[in-house]
Length: 120
Image (cartoon, rainbow, N blue to C red; front, side, top):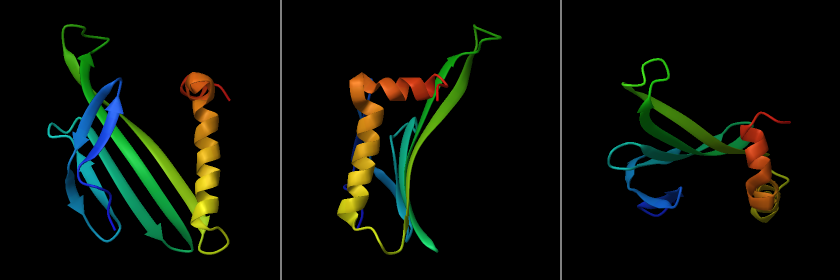
């Protein structure tokens, strides 16, 4: 079963529509028409089950060495859940992920800000 097509991701208050551009046995990829926002969902089934959602954001911005020139930049955000084949129900897995995300988002994303600032 695949995610809805298209997916929508809101970044800085702007919703980006991401139609599905590929699908195979392990996952799907969604991309904005200009390629500046891409999302993928991939599953790997080995000794443990690994599920990864990923966003890649790209932009052009002034080069710090040559401010008159724009340079392409990109960043990637991953969420990976690695679980044993047995021992955790989907509900238990979701509860752990929810708790983790709530911690990062608490107090207007204070821990995300700390993470991005290099704190530990």
